[in-house]
Image (tube, rainbow, N blue to C red; front, side, top):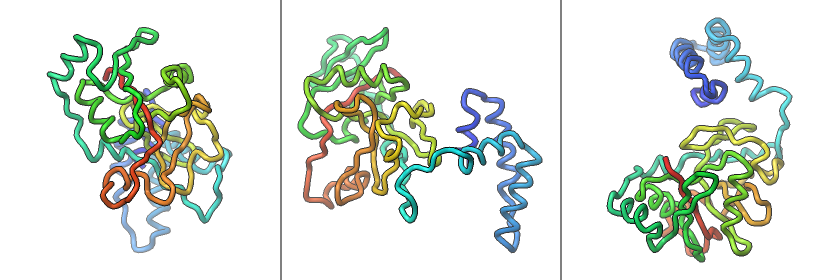
Length: 249
């Protein structure tokens, strides 16, 4: 519910705070019957913040498209799984080196529309956790494209057909997803295929050369997040990811 409040309060700090206050007042109701509890909680929300509650209901149960696949598949939500598991630690020596030489052996600093971007070297198989930690070590964060122009810039760094890792996203509901660091909502035109953006299998978001946009990528036969967190449990190493980009925080 807190994520839903955050979603409908984008760029409005006052409205966000009012939503949190209403949540604190209404979320603690505990009655003997679950249906009565739900009713009293909803009624409280209607009294405290009717416009905000109405928007939350619209986001979840309105006329928006219900994406494939249908029930009984429940798409596993994408989460901020790396940043939740690992602190972002800056290495001042590494930061000074990349700022001075523009190259650190793993990638190069480039400029795109007045935006400083660190573009990694091409590798055969990239681990998202290593990419996240490297961005942190040089005082940057993983790229979270907010426009198709930024997405296309990713593709322009490729010399052939490959997949690039982008920042983490967090699933809010079946029609909204946000970047973990900026908390910005990803618009529909940032997805390659709206009908399959929330697959039945666990997934992470990447940018690929073919679509010049975003698409969900799953690890066949396993939980992709579990695979990267606990690789020792699996007997394969190829990830299909070849490059990552970092930007200033």
